[in-house]
Image (spheres, rainbow, N blue to C red):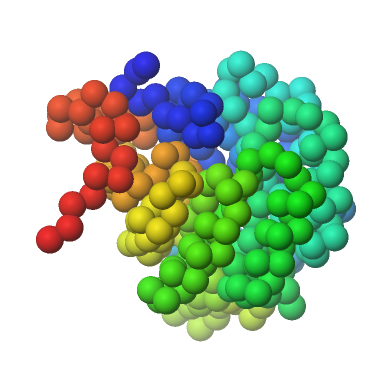
Length: 310
């Protein structure tokens, strides 16, 4: 095993890095670029039953501290990504399929097709799509989240993971974790999706910077690192039988190290990947390896979850 070797669901990864769903993964060309990169794995764009164009442009805007977006789930439809999963080279690196149906029925239809295809792809069920107008996030509706997981675990007989929105209250950490712990099939938890319904204002134009939702959108990048780390650590502590994938605010190797300390087994990169492209993974791996070596660690498992408190 190398210095950066990682493991999730008993599957070995060359390193803990992958893209965040939604970034650089909408079509085959982007997915192939990720597959050819130094990332340890990759995840497809969150897919819906039918293809979607998404929200009107401009729907993404970079800022000095990250980004704001309201994409509206633009994707080619689940059959497109399932076809990619069927021809993917799993010997090279694992693949995650992100599923984000607009209804429970849509999710069950997609999961049935994924199960029938019998690929090694790992499902990440997105419970945190904040950018579809008029649609609430399942992750913030605990009754709906429970009903969703009850139905999915009955219909889909493989381990899978869930992608969650950020939580901001200890009571919500407790309640969400209690629900997740009822379902052993939920084998990993990805924290976090973007922080929803933020607003960026252009002072000179006296205007919002994205078109959908009157300028309201999810923020990522430097803004969200502390919130992401808190959610990773909160669920690592509360869901000891599950693994955690960290996501949010990663631009340097030390940020990956922070996610690992907080309890993450793998770490996704979103805004920084959007801005820098797939070459970022080689840089981040180098920076993480240098940090681990400097601190005398022989592998990331020596770091994971070892965060000290005062």
